[in-house]
Length: 212
Image (cartoon, rainbow, N blue to C red; front, side):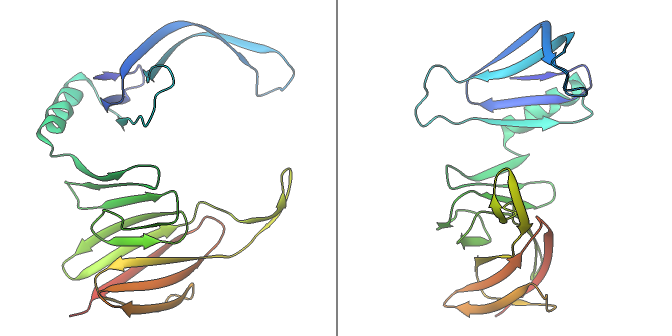
């Protein structure tokens, strides 16, 4: 369930189907000249075979740069022991996982969602990418909105528009330093709700302290 390519990139497939590997001559359009000509080469391709018309299928894989066979054998052993990372949620609404080595927890939230299964974020009313890390009583967040929210429509997109995103955190928190993009923050019941104005796909860093 793992292999290493010629560039030293390791691939570990935990689930999702059989791994298919093919080495063959391939022709591709020459994107450098856009002239209609093709380039040719002997290339290696690998993919997960999900079968025909899978229903409610899923998959899980890890890409590891600068690895060799010995590294991958060790990583495979760690995966079988469950000590590399933990998947909290993997569905159409969100992918959430935390890393054992450093405690970082990553959120890729695809749909407006509540009842999220990670340790820190309860809900988001818009798709958002977030990394969270708890250090003692301080929670560090890095937030990015992948939607540039352009005016107009393809192919004549206009400027980016500011898009507010409202996120609910599990627990009671206060913002350490004011952030101009954070338009509101409040403790609501046992949770903390804040709204941040995002634009240009930028990443915003926030530090919050737990409130007793």
